[in-house]
Amino acid sequence: MKTGMQRPAPPECRQACDRLQDYLDQTLPKRESLAVFLHMRECGGCRAQLEMLQALYAKLGDLPPLEAPADFDARILAAVPYEAYRAMAPLRSPRVPILLVHESLPAWLRSRSVRLVGLVAATAALAAAASGAAAGTAAWTVAGVGCLPELSVRLQNLTRRVYVATVHRSIPR
Image (cartoon, rainbow, N blue to C red; front, side):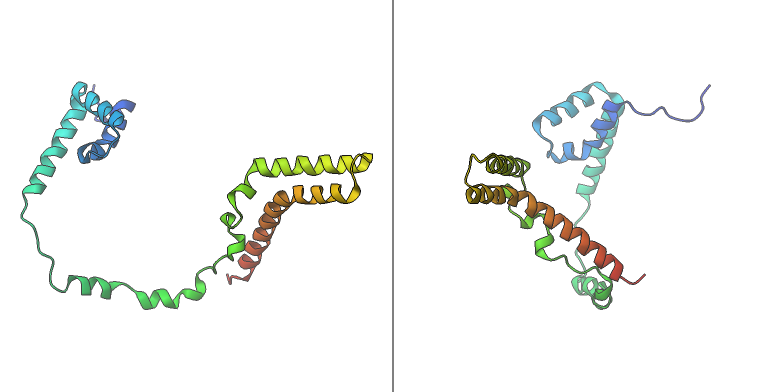
């Protein structure tokens, strides 16, 4: 007894059909292209889909080229609402200061390994100073320098949160 509903396609068919456009454009990596090719060779339903698309593209390729009207560019540019966009400038959120952008700190400074090594060095320097094994000034200097990467990242995150909260409170609802 037929219910009129089709069974869902198996995952291999869905993946192959999702890649058909790239396969026809020959933009798939070789391995994926080969997988689609082999699937098409074995699956009649997917091969029919491929053949239908190839026939459609062939028909589209046979159509005569159309010339755009002479005033096409001017009509498109006239339709762009530049004035409305400019009028909405106060409603758009303000730009975030560059200091608050995550990438404003160097990548090496943000890396977890540098931050961890710095904290370990700071802890070791403070332990050495407490036990009397190191001179006080040198230990405090090492501890301060070791904490700088972590403090920089945390300060930036805190400042970003405060800034965002302030901006959100200042936007009229």
